[in-house]
Image (cartoon, rainbow, N blue to C red; front, side, top):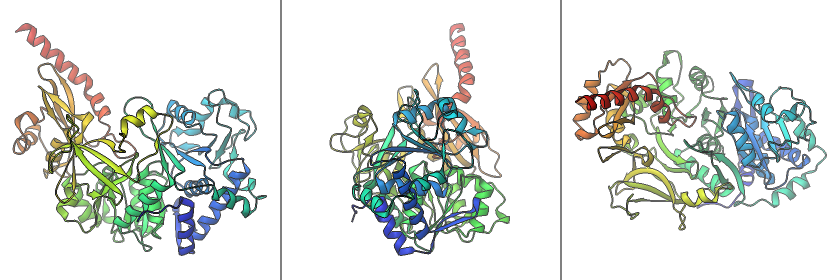
Length: 553
């Protein structure tokens, strides 16, 4: 049964229930906050936002690594009906400028950055007025909506407040002001805007309301079987729904403690699992790969028992090693999109065969269907087609982009995922590829995912990624990037011989490239555009030679 409570309402109830139990643990600064402290801090922050003049519907952006302050800001915004705009920490200066302007954010919370990435330098280059203006009085030609900047760390900037100043702004306000603001917020009001990282064009702002976020976190947490004895290691970024909704709030709603890592670092994550007795680790395939490629003998990981894999399906070899070497016996595949949060998920009670090869069944509140690409008609059981989703968790739309919204969601409310799938009689769904990734070789449509899934079954292959490369004769040819399994030496011919046992001849990769790792996005997806760029010159030369040979024949 789905509920109609706001994020603030459900969180207040949870905090009252779990009181003095640990809610947020931040080993990086040796900070721990109980559920009671979390709600007290969010109330103080919410009053501070009111003191700064924030009103229901105002947009406030955040650019930072994971921290307790992020969670507190989310709850504070939710209490007064403000909308938190979540910005990817990998954003370039131009992307940051676009998102801040397109989202019409009037407040911006940020840290100085990390490593060689300076959030602050990017911002002051976009808004040099911050170097001379008074805090809260920014007047920028580039970002006309942005008025207030707040620093979340000890960085100094003349035109910005510090986070502690926000709470000071609310100290003259009583509880009545906060309660009055809260009464105006409903479950169908917008809660967040998450910007998708498309491969072409500007990112699109996905608007999610309280109802979608709260209920998706509840049903996902239930299927993951989180409980109050769990300690969830949060390495997934809070600017993605897999870290924000499906890890943090899915855990908190069931009384789990969230152990916050600023970002994923292999050895630090392993140390945190050991030192904090974490029971849950959620990640993308590359995170698990990095952990398994480390000497695990120096880490006690016996506390681990639960976790999910999101972003991409992983190989049998990787799944086996997660179970055997990390001890996560109930590891689950989770499938979702920013536009619909969690869509399908494996359950711990599902057969291992499904846990290995399937993305699970639809979550409660989700309808799915598979349609033929040509006709748009629903396919028969087991036939390949595009996955369409209708659910309680689908976005309100793309912010200020009705055309894109209409292209993504039809008049009956079905979201086009762009994923090719099959579904069996029991409702288990198998990913067959992305529509836009289809390779057209000599007129044949070939799914890279089909080839990848075959290759990943081979014991000598740790992971595989397949792309199209240009070919003079056939238009496109197949190139497979392979990460060999630990201790295995492979040849291209060996890979092709294995592929020939399971694939039609025209689907066997012509080119094999062995690599140590793949370039990935922050959500764990392989950057196939980067792979194509890496071999662009090589295959341009091949095509040139083929053309020259054809002329000389």
